[in-house]
Length: 596
Image (tube, rainbow, N blue to C red; front, side, top):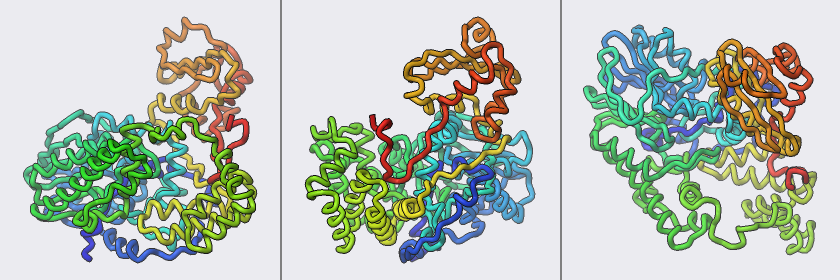
């Protein structure tokens, strides 16, 4: 099968996943764990899509494939270059730029972010060789980058590390479905730069003699854009097309992705009738008829899942029932550019239910469900005790009913977190499911969770950003993360007002702890001067950011603040309430105080 038939894209970002990987990390903890898992034949064949190299699309358009999770695209103009998407680390970006420089030595005049995911924006520093390089993006892109790097960073990072297989060796991690690997790790550097030119719907411009149009096209992300080069008839669709079944939902976690907006965005691209299409993942698609065929299939698959999910929902189906009901018709299910090597139809149907109706599945039993521990105890009681429940789990494993074994051991671990036998059965079930899974996201999640249980670690490494990276991040994001980290028990009887004033940027933030809630507001210096606070500290903005990012010792940092009111001891006591909670091991129950 030709490589083009199995191409892909990404979704990260992470992720976010990547999201935090700036510099130093706990290398021993982040070390790849070996896993005895056979690489699936389909995934091995799919790796051909990511053959490393720079592909010439037209005389002016080249795309670097296989250097990281995403592609970077170079457009050569009369007296300069445009770079579309910048890889996920500065190291990857430097490798790509070295290859681009073999083609052209012209200066880089502009950078374009197709969307906010880290594999598209974190190598910008390398390509921005001059400080005045224009960086184009949708008006909401900076907001979504900040969301990934601050408020949602802990959980998105942990789930991304599992989904992209960062802890797996080459036997476990064959490829990531939309790229050969997710390349952030110990020693990586993040080089994000905020956009300098933004727009809402459409923007037409010219750089280095290249005429282009940027169009807001929500799909894989809300800030997704595509780029159209009318003189060259080249479409750059970003991540709205990547030659495998799209991640209409990603298991690392994401805001709801509107399927209706996605397929309508694909229609907008189809209406251009491009002769060349260069996705930000996988390989280019050449020829107007070929592009029309794959884009039509792509949008039809997305609309089919949208329409049939709504149809099933209106029939009263639950999310579990939807996963059995919504199946692509054969001509789409068999299409090589719609294979489930990144997204899955079943995940998409579940997301449609939650995105349109919310969490309640319509079953009255779901209104006030038993706690996870109570459910586990009920299962044990029905089985005739924990020993009998364990015997059922072992029997399911022996019979090859791995999903059943996985679910039963989940109950056992809830009841007895130190039950070694239950964990052994669970690890074997996870490994078996992972070895048999073609979808790399699911495969990596199964195999990584098995390693976490076996080796007693959490796939959430401490990855430290550089001071230069932190300096580019808006201050609001740091306070957003503080608010969601407030300890509800330590603060439930507390009323306290604190001001953090930044002498170098003439800004201040008030924090009002009000019995379990931290109301945080930006303040002008004049406003702050007129308000009453129990603590009023004056700090340098860089020191504050680096303290929260664990680049500075917090005690020493707070001792260096100037206090208009209060003192270091009071400040340390106050900040202790915002300590991030430690992540738990997979299926490890929370303590009783948390359950309450």
